[in-house]
Structures are given as structure tokens and as C-alpha cells.
Amino acid sequence: MFIITVIKLLLIALNIFPSRFTNRRIMFLIYMTNLVTHVMMDEPRFAQPIPNVTVAVGRDANLPCVVEHLGGYKVAWIHIDRQMILTIHRHVISRIPRYSITYTDNTWLLHVNQAHQDDRGYYMCQVNTNPMISQVGYLQVVVPPNILDIESTPSSVAVRENQNINMTCRADGFPTPKIIWRREDGEEIAVEKKKKVLVYDGDVLPLTKVSRNEMGAYLCIATNGVPPSVSKRIILDVEFSPMIWVPNQLVGAPAGTDVTIDCHTEAHPKAIIYWVYNSVMVLPSKKYKTDYTENSYRAHMKLTIRNLQYGDFGNYRCISKNSLGETEGSIRVYEIPLPSTPSKQVTHTTVESRESNIIASLRNDTTKLQQTDVYGMKNDLFTGGGSSLAGSGSSSAASSSSSSSMQTSLLPGGATGNSLSALSGGVGGGGGAGGGAGSKGSLAIGKSMFYTERPPNTNAAG
Image (cartoon, rainbow, N blue to C red):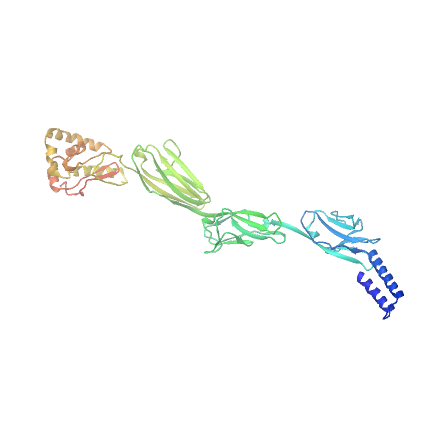
């Protein structure tokens, strides 16, 4: 409007003024300048542009329109995107109650309360001059991210070990949110066979040939620069049948002591774990103490057997069972002798399967037990106590057959203790012939086998 007025005045001035100036014409030029200034001062004009405003959804927004020299003209607000007249002067035309208008100091302020996404767009402030004047501003309504559960993977998902799975996380908002994945425990994510990352970008997290180590909680995080960011926790369960490994499959302990055996197991879903002895489940009691420690899909099971007796030795089984299968581990508890005085014997421990084998071995080895050096020990065996030694032979043999365990000690240099003298009665008069063979005897005591320093000779008894 201002430019058009100036052009008109210049055209008039060019038509009136000749090539030379006179005082009368100069006065006329001054008059015309004052007239233009007066016209410009009286015409409405915008003092400043409408700023672009950004507001989060649900918050209030204000759009200012500053008009100078409005005079008798009126100001209107129009939402261009909706093609809707909102206000005219001080009156609200729109039926949307969230719009209102206020006027202070040449400023017409449009209020948008609790902004919706539909309020986003261009707004025009218009003055009904002829021709009409107007200016436009933009209202940006941003929306924080929101995860769409209906389009995303559930909060808990299960997959069999070594299978593939894709976990999905969808979110909306404005601007469009960015999705990242990370593990809750801070471990790396194996997205490919040889590629591991701490953070993975994308709506879909692909996992191939899932292992039990990848079990746990995963976080899907959506951000778009509008606070607050949101996340979803998805628990991945990797299912597999139970596995057991036993640190020690053979455990030896003396009678009358306590012993602890243990097994390690892995299973998911959670397994039922227990101990079995002689086909009967072991329950906590004065005799047995059970202890189970669980960590995720791992479990450590311990069994303490108190005051070991003869009936406590044997095979114990640790069993782990879930919906996908069952497995067990076996531990054999056997007896070892209590520590005794130092001896030069070489001790080997063997485990017999049946008590009958032990008794048979005891009887056979008793008849074969001889001196390490028969010639060096002959005088000690038959001098100074021949009658008593002979008399004790039958009683010693009887006691050896009735006793369940026996200890023997061979001293270097041909000397023997009371055990050896008891065994000499079992050997009898065949000692001289056996000594000539120079062989070694053996004695089974309970479930332990003691050997002298020379190897056994099965022909010595002949």
C-alpha cells in the first residue's frame, strides 16, 4: 500500500514540475510530501512479523499480531490449513472453545489452549483494508514418543535355543521417533555371528541362533527430541532341556565324618532339582542337609551327609527335570580309612560293587599275606612265643572272618605288629613254603585295598 501511494505521488510530481523549479512549485512539492506522510501515518500496517511458535501437545500457545494505526479497520485470525475463520476483532467465530483473543497495546493475541495435533499449521492475521493486508505465522505442535504395544513384541517372549527371533518395537510421535535397542545388563547384543554391538538402531532387532547367554531383558528406547523419552522392557526367555555336570564323581570320606557332594545344572524353564539315593528321594533331615542356589537359568545343588555310616556309602544321583526333558548326574561316595601312624605301605583305593566281593577278597588275601622278607622275620615269628603264637592262630583267624574291617602294618627289617601275628595263625605251617616264594600279600579292609611293597603272586599259596 505504501509503495503504491509513493508511485502515484511521483507520477503526479513528474507531470506537474517542468525542467526548472520555481518557488511556487517548491511549495507544492512540500505540500505533497506532507500529504503522503499524513496518508502513511493514517493507514494500518504491521509493526512486526508473526513468529513461528512450537508447543508440545496439550500445552498452551499464543500467536501475536501487532497492527499500528488500525483506525476503524478490524483484525481477523484465520487457520489456513483448516480454512477456518477463528476470530474477527474481539469476537471468537470458531466453535472450538480452545481458541480465544485478547487485545493490548496494538497487539492482537490469539490463544490456543491445550493444543492438539490438528492445531498444527499456518495462521493468518488479516486487516480488512482495501486492498486487504495480511501476514502469516506457523504453529508447530510436537508430540513426545509413545510406544505402540499393539504393534510391538510382548513384554515377555520365549524361543527355543538355536532358533531365530525378531523383536519389534513401534512408536509414534512428532517428529517421527528414533528406536534404539540395548540390553538391560549392559552386555553386547549379537546381531550377527561375528558382530556384537552395545546399541542397535531400528524398529526390528533380529537375533539368529539364539543361545542361552542371550537370555535376559532388552530395552527398546524411543526418542524424537521431545521430552520425555520412553522405553519398553522385553524379557527374552531361551528355552532348553536340562544339563548337569558334576565336579567330582568319586568322593571318599572316613566313616563317622560329614561329606558334601554337589552338582551344577542349567535349564529353562526352571527345573525341578532333587537328590536320589537307593531309588528314594533325599529329603532334609538330621542325616541330610540340602542346599540349592539359583541364578537365572543356573543352579548349584549341594548335599551334605552327616555322620557317615556303612549304609551311607554308595551312588547318589542329582536329578534336574523340566518340561523339555530330564537329566541326571551320579556321584559315588566310598569309604577311606581314618589317618593312622606313618607307614611305608603304598595305599591304593578301589571301589567294589558288592559286599560279597569284598568278603571273598578278604578271605583269599588273608591266606596270601606274607612277610616282606621271610628269612629276616622267621626268628621273630617262632622264637620266644611259639606256643602262644600257635594258640592264637585259630582265634585270630576266627576274628578276621567275623570283623568287617581290619588294619595291618608291616614294619621294615622283618618286625611285625600284633596284626601280623594274628594273621600268621591263618597262614599256619605253610609259612615256610610261602616264604620261599617271596611274594606279596593283600588285604581288603572295608572298601580299601592295602598292598605291601612287592607285587602279589597268586602261586604263593601252592
